[in-house]
Length: 52
Length: 410
Image 1 (cartoon, rainbow over the protein chains, first blue to last red):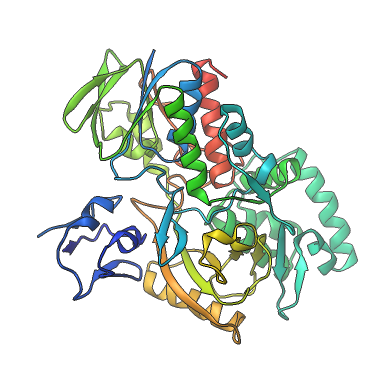
Image 2: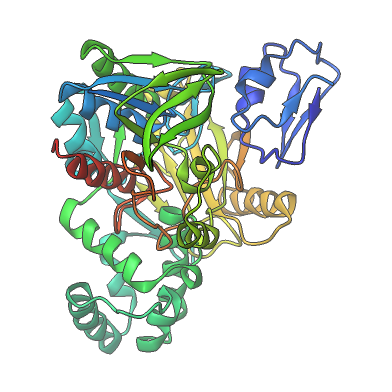
């Protein structure tokens, strides 16, 4: 997943990630548990996450 | 009469509840898969964290939000916090917020009483900041720190960045309504109860529904385009602030666009903590004027233990963001916690930061430009258009009150 500079670090993606694959500390970063399911894209309030 | 509401945050839902109760056919369009905006629960590791607000209603069961919830028939139990607030002093001693004047030498104490009483009645007309206003009368480190702690907690701003008259309105509201309180079930119980009311009034809530345009005809809002489909309505209410909303139509009013440019969002950091034993021991506000960054903390599980797994406490700290280096700001907040609770067993669950496009408040207190737009039948609600002196969701409620009055249904 690609996180754009718009990410503010609200943590919504981390809470909704089914694989516990997102760490948030000022902004979101995916770890190696990420399987690119795309759930986070839907839950980002400012469309800062994309699939490519 | 039909109303389209853009965004299902607290402002959008309160307006929808009011309008649907008054007989409007209401549609609420939410881009995300869930409702509530920054006033929703965020389930995480068995805790009910929140998308934004700290599971707290600033003026509790007697404030503007509570009053509006009761008017629309939303079933929410708000437990008023006792004590309302405590202050952690420089020597780590804890005192009741109501007794802070006792910390001052007698002459300053008397002066503060007089000046506060006068200024609450006759608020400064100028744009003097709360810090400068405080300094004008008192050269006192404790008072200046308390001013920052209070403004940071309540408004996510430093005392130097907020007009004194706005803070004095807030203090006036504290005397008027008292506070604070915790809604049983957290923020999500409030927005959930509003959603139930809207549905029972015949209104509809649509998630995953992105409004891409507001339809304007002859300077009048006549509907919205949702996921590319046009939906006509007599009234359009936007819960996404002036700046975001004006991008949804071709706004030509230069004065209005200039005003929007001056609106600044407020930034904050919330640290969510799981504790095996209470860190502060009550559900009121714990003001921390002697930290590097954290302005205040709450521990809502004393009012609603179900917000955490059995035997745990949910503790949340809040701090205004001072510099552009968010990671450093967070580190300073984490160090504050370490210093304040050196022997307590706790674990950091999630650090949430809010700024720019997803801020604490879309319009920092004192920068609000009201609920109207240059287009008729298009209004703004939410934290981008709060009422005077309204802390967070109380301000959102006062803003909604202004709008429904203007529409003529309150």
